[in-house]
Amino acid sequence: MTIIRNIDQKCPVCGKLSSQPVLSSTNAMDYPDLDLRPAEMQRSTMSIWVLECPHCGYVSGNFKNETQITEDFLKSDSYQTCDGIEFIGKLSKRFYRAYLIAKESEDSVKCFFNLIHCAWDCDDKNDPNATRIRKLAIEQFDNLDYDESERKNYLAIKADLLRRSGEFDRLVKEFSDIRIGEEIYDDIIQFQIQKALKKDTECYTVGDVKKSTMIK
Ligand SMILES: [Zn+2]
Image 1 (cartoon, rainbow, N blue to C red):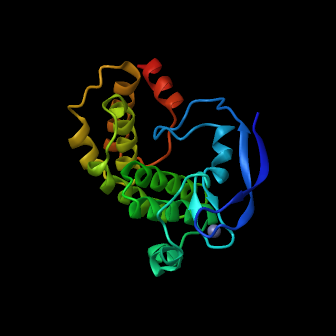
Image 2: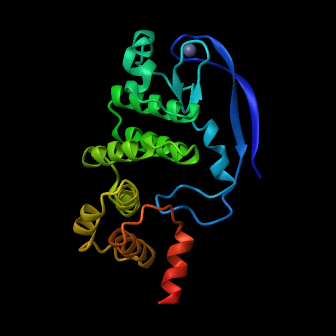
């Protein structure tokens, strides 16, 4: 089960205290979505993946980490307006700001995942900005500095980003010749190609892939 406590934490930018949620435990009970979004109950903890200082607006996964970000940066138009993107959800804004901070800190992996988390919250709020955010995440892909052992996960996420943002031809072209050599990942990629050929942008889970391979 999910247990969340609140404790006072000091913001590393403005130095002021605020009560912030801390996750004691959680678990995922079902298959993740194809972009590796976790199932419940872990899914519902997304609201506390990024903390927000109510005093200066700084956001971070952990206030204990030091940062080079300044209060001037937090007051910039880009940060204040989320680059002019009018998100429906407060959480979408928070993830977008975490992306802006990661970009300023030149952390490509954090940029990528904050955009994906932002898109997930847009999905939950039926916010059409989800497509724009997924396209922005795809743009980050070539700059990603990830470990080779993680390649299969990144490719699985990229295939889903392409299909769900309507880049069907690009998905089929880029992924038709890719073989991971691990059954579930190759099944996921084949599933994505089949859905892309049908111009399907819906959300599917790893469970849906397993069901489709059983039918064959
Ligand atoms: Zn602060």
